[in-house]
Length: 234
Image (cartoon, rainbow, N blue to C red; front, side, top):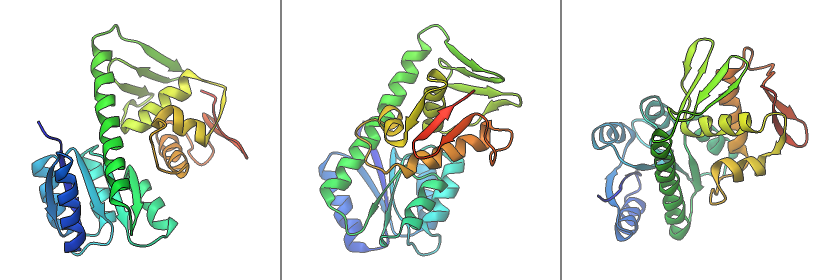
């Protein structure tokens, strides 16, 4: 079955170019021109990946990302016309997985789409392999991870974690007390093919802290090592 990609872009020329080139790569491509329709199609068609322009009529890409991320873990590649870090960072903070700034190379976009889908497939394969093995757990204080069930628990019960939040927490717990730079964490958790910047690590650490720290603004588990990176203290 072909993987399905939803392209959300209000510029007709860009939308048609994306549709054509993604189709040539063998993907099933769905296209829409505004955010409101994007939400409807995403909910009904269940795409494997969404290419999403930020500047959209009706409902903009920021709102689309925020709404979809509450409902789904579908990978989102955002497109922004402005070379403005705040757009990229805000998009990532809302839950997007990667970004490209316009104008972009079609070859680069296709490479990122392939890498993102490959990571999703790999994650699913690892999850399925884990289910066939004996349950393995990691524990640190009142924090417990069941690797086979892909589940994290704290004092309040199950902790809702996104895929990369979970992977990052597992890596931290497996390497408690060690300091890692942002680039090392990108390589170990996201993989060498990941093309996003190290800001991605900061965003995910902030998300994790909000879920596992008693006081996220004064973390005692995931410690910032100034000028270096992060250390997990448990």
